[in-house]
Image (tube, rainbow, N blue to C red; front, side):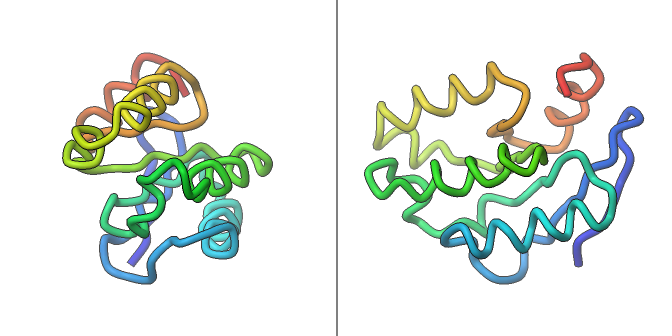
Length: 123
């Protein structure tokens, strides 16, 4: 079950690890709608919820999904270990590094890292 939490005065929708797979724009819009409805500024989605195609940049799935979040002004956090994906793809590793420099899309290992990010006022 998805839960709305406030972390350092920032409303965050913590999405459950169980549930449907995010494979494209349609599923992304469902998450965006839920986050917006609940008043969340960020949607935190466990890595397990993403289709494998998300981590292959050549499919453009990641770009399509992230673009929807940007368009609707909801931050997205991909939460969990993606090391097997980044080890296999220098392009993905670079993409993750660039995203993590920004203020809209983060790839984070755990909730403690999320708390630190939101504490620093990066949100």
